[in-house]
Each structure stands twice: as C-alpha cells, then as structure tokens.
Length: 266
Image (cartoon, rainbow, N blue to C red; front, top):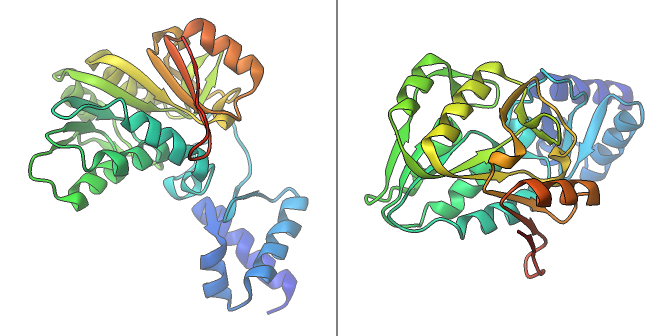
C-alpha cells in the first residue's frame, strides 16, 4: 500500500470512529509503529486530524459536536487518571454516589469498584459495565435506562423519570466544557436535561474536568460554576481558569502526575 493510500485509510477510520489508536492501525495496516506515527504527523499538519497520546482523533469542536466514547477515551489519559484517583478519595464506603457518563467518570469507576457497600447510580452503559465486571456482591448499581447517545449516555424521559425519584450523597459529573459565562456544558440537549436531574438529586456536586475543557462551550448548560462544591482538574489549567474557579466554586483541586503535590484552593 502506498503512503497516500495508507493515510487515506487512516483518515477514513478516524472520521468513521472519531478516533484511532496507533496500536490498532499497526495491526490492521501491517506496518511499523514509526510509519503510522509519520502518517499521523502528515495528516495532522494538513489539519485533517488531531494527534493525541497513543493515536489521533477527528478535528472540530462545535457547540453541538459530540465525540464518541472511543474518541474521548484516548484524550488526556494521564490527566483523567490523576483526576479519577483524587476523586475516589472523596467517596466513603456505604454511601450513594451518582456517576454521569463520560470517559473521566468511567476512569473513576475503576477506582470505586473496590469500595465496599456502595450504591451507584449512573446513566452510563460504560460505567455500569465496570461495576458489573468487578462483581462485588455488596455493591448496588442502578442503570437508569433511556436513549443511548454517541458518548454512551442514557438520556431522555425514561432516564429523567428514574433519576427524579432518587437521592444521592455525591454526584461525580463529567462535562464537555466549562466557561465563566456558560458554566458546565454539554453538546447534547437531552444529556444536559438528564444531567441537571442528577445535579438536583445530589447533596454534593463534584465536577471532574481536565484542563482542556476550560473555554469549551457546549450548546446546553448543565450547571453554573457556583453550583459545584468541588472541581477536580489538573495543573495544566490556565491561570485565568484557576482564578475564576477559585472565586466561584467551593473547592478547586488540581492534580498532577503520581507523587506530585496537589494544589487546593478554597
């Protein structure tokens, strides 16, 4: 296969799935890791894809664009892991915790799977599957039902009706974007409605958002910044964002690599 043909095949895969991993492309196209990385570099320089750690994602970030779960799962993996690890420290055994859909909350689910006697409410197929695979008999997992979105969230009137009857101690909320004017947002109108019900059901709102979410605005607001009791992000968050969030949220926690000191502003 010529380089041009190979790059076209890569581009079509990224556009179809929203993302592609280097390891998968190496296996499917039968070339070296270095060759795939050079192809990705060429496509990125032409503005056709965005290179990320371990692969590539489709370009574009409109207010209604909703990347699929696979596309988001390869972005900011180290930051999401650090955020999830810190968020897990806020969850006590025997409590009821809600997890919204998203790759950061999915990462968090792996850290919560060993906490005893949890009751977990989620509208995420992926999150529920993590707990199902862990198989702890002392955990209760409630999956809301609803219509499935590209990010594997269950939304709509069925999900809203289920959540409206529940009360939880803490909501761990993943977001598409956060902005001083728009607050915490999503590109999916039905998901925003469902997430607003999760916010209303929780005594404490904890938002999990890596630094790339700052300045991104989805079409619909889930909650204003000052509704969050805790925001957990990473040390890549710009100074402007740190100042704004420190002024408006209850507690801002910035995580770094494993072993690095954390920044906490209250």
